[in-house]
Image 1 (cartoon, rainbow, N blue to C red):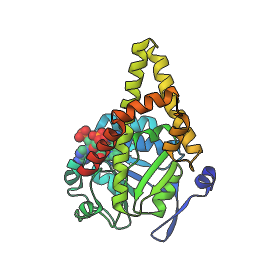
Image 2 (cartoon, rainbow, N blue to C red):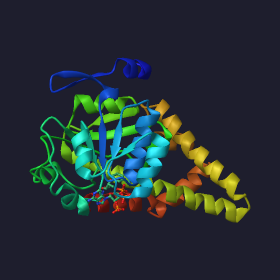
Image 3 (cartoon, rainbow, N blue to C red):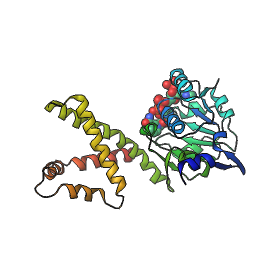
Image 4 (cartoon, rainbow, N blue to C red):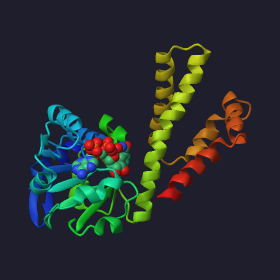
Length: 274
Ligand SMILES: NC(=O)c1ccc[n+]([C@@H]2O[C@H](COP(=O)([O-])OP(=O)(O)OC[C@H]3O[C@@H](n4cnc5c(N)ncnc54)[C@H](OP(=O)(O)O)[C@@H]3O)[C@@H](O)[C@H]2O)c1
């Protein structure tokens, strides 16, 4: 279905009642970095419904009120009391604090962004409603081309996110958990691009040219890879790094220095900690 069609015709079944998505009210507990970019992504995708924010962290809340048309509630309970869907986006250590004394209703849906906090751990908080969905979108979603990893499947939430980008539903929680590893690796890519940029500026390119060239080449690689989904990524590399080319010279050096093994070790280290 085309994105416009989804926006126009989006009707969601909630507790047996059909609701237009813009009639759904989103509440946010944990008005910080995560809240800021998921709200921007949803607004960019065309979601025009009400968004009610926790008053804590006034600066984030006021920015979102002024720039994204959100409301600031008087208390966390007022957020929960006024929302159909509650985004839980405090840091994991603050989960107990934020939930203490809060009262949810059975037909509410909670979206947990908390990295490394399982459904079992969330359900140990008996005041949370039955419908708890874990989500793990990364910060780039505010700039478009959003991806929303989630677990488990939930028709209403999938339709909501589909307005703003691609939805990836993981059937198994262990598979979903790896989207946390993916989100971390996404962060490392900036460091990799920054390191390449530094090298080019040290050789004489201006900061502006170096940054632009690096970012555009990385984007070129991802655009090409997305346009050719049938090709293994390492086969694309091999098709460029042919015998006798400068590309192969550098690639062989990276392999000899275990650059990619080191990267995989970093992925494993995060997975082991989750
Ligand atoms: N940032 C990312 O890229 C990212 C990606 C995926 C998932 N996540 C997940 O998203 C969650 C939030 O991360 P973040 O980076 O957005 O952190 P953050 O910027 O620190 O935001 C957390 C917010 O929660 C607020 N808070 C703490 N206790 C509260 C309470 N009792 N009631 C209401 N608000 C409370 C904090 O306010 P104070 O500052 O006043 O304490 C802060 O505004 C984490 O669980 C993380 O695992 C983050």
